[in-house]
Image (tube, rainbow, N blue to C red):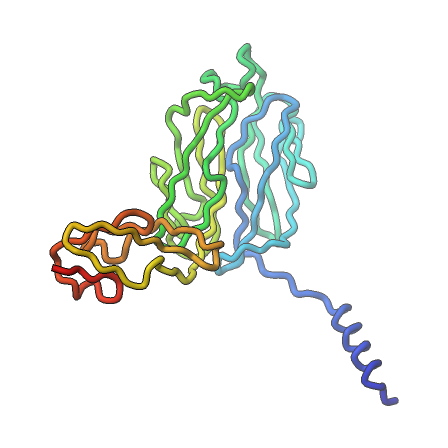
Length: 271
């Protein structure tokens, strides 16, 4: 039997609609935070992420959650953890045979209203809340500590960690540098509480704010490096020719007496 063109197209679409979609293979699972401190009855979600072998985020990954002791820490199907009684439990996020775990501490509430934390710090946040970087680009995360009533308190000593340092590294002061394309999570911990910030590192074309700059010795001008595919944000990486001119992508450029030929296509220094 021969089908008309319209029926043939409909049959093709029907077959395409019923064909099963091939799931992406998960190579790694990450969870944030890696440690959790809860009061009895307190709730906090787990943030789980799955990546393929190239480090690409798999947005439609489905996770199951497991707890080593549901009497201490109960975990719901959506990853919400609930403190039940004092103790320590391990909670895992699982997908396609891959897993990542975190430690959950549940404690009694002391007179200050905190669990094992006498600094008055009850919440830690990071500014900005997330980062998008180019390989080699730098950024800074600022920790901010507050009490339950919203008043600020000193953060004290903060420890930093990148879950995937091959994608982005962080130093002891919260300075982050993009290393290679991929996604990671930066963790900051202080006085028993933790904050996290996702970091996405991508390669992208960049554009200088000026095609040509002519400077006399000691004259000042400004060059900015923007990323068109990332809402034209101004990149914060240092200038490629920083040995010739004291240049930064969003700050003032000062000419020097070094040969202008080293700045071919970017700067011309008149004498």
